[in-house]
Image 1 (cartoon, rainbow, N blue to C red):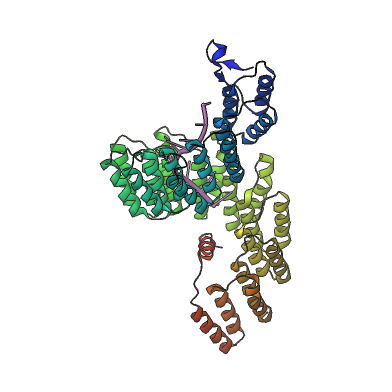
Image 2 (cartoon, rainbow, N blue to C red; image 1 turned 135 degrees about the vertical axis):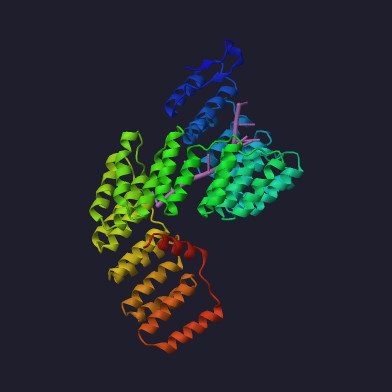
Length: 512
DNA sequence: TTAGGGTTAG
């Protein structure tokens, strides 16, 4: 069972490296609680830590619950920190916060290792404001020290939430204080800035690194290269690539994948293929992401047969196609109206142990509606829900658009009703799609009624809503009404919101 | 014995 690290059992330094899963852990736990005298807290903590390392948070929590229900089994502050970490990693931050109370009951004080998982968990659950508030409280009320790890968690969370400005401020706070930022934190912020398309600010920060004695690594370079190449700033990419190698920092598989992917997205798939060959010459092993990027590049060019060739060659290369590889090819086939090929692949996925995922379902639904196979699309929509795959914003847009575009307006209206009843993710754009469908079908009355109903649903018409109705009126020759709506729209100075722009961008990017 | 760490896909 438990192996001692060393020869002296009284040191009680247990090693659980051989524990490979929850069952193993439970066996060890049972033996520990049956042994007399009961071991001290260390092996219990080690066992729970091992489960955390294996990402078996549920198993760790169920052992912990057993520990507290059995009198005599020791629980210390380290144990509680492990438990909080488990909750936070299973999207149950609130249970994590409840556990903090146990510290005081047991006369312990929470420390940095208590608060950093809580902060990380709040960011993970997208509770950005609460995370920021907690961080401020930690600093102001000195709930614990603020070390490099806490700063790192907050900077990472802020960057991922798109608040790079505040992340940069924190870097500055760190520079003035005791714990200086390191290469990880700089790389996080550079990556965050690039993702926000603020590449010039990223370059500025990147240039500051050597002056401050902070090393750049392949990760720093990769993040910046991605930022530049996604904006087609190829000259700078080339210069940066050369500079990186001159500094004896060598691109890894991820760096090559980034370059290949961005070249493909630019339509330069043959150049991307050259990069693949260079990568292989340099003894880097391309992986499923490399090949998926290339497949996508070929599909974007309408060269779906070449994408298929790559897909078919994967097993021979020891690479297993992923859900995404399938999704790319399915989408490519639909785009070229090769419906049977697309559906064959879609049906093959479960046999390969792959679940389609929401994006693939969306591609299939979109493709089927496009070729007017509405009953097949409705069947897939049902299958999707049966597979417990929750429709997202795009799914509903595709469904509503597909139903309206195929003269199934009644069905679109009842789906709108269903979405509304679910109460989640309710968006003005769903109405815009249906109103557009109604206007095109000369059912202006029903469209007007939907428009009039919007305030009661807590929705505000946006510029698209107005444009749709104006178009509908013009189509019917009701120019005066169109003019009135235009005036109302101008008075309210409404603009497209971010959600719509995102949708619109995706729709056009996919040549919907 | 507890907390983190960064770069790639549809």
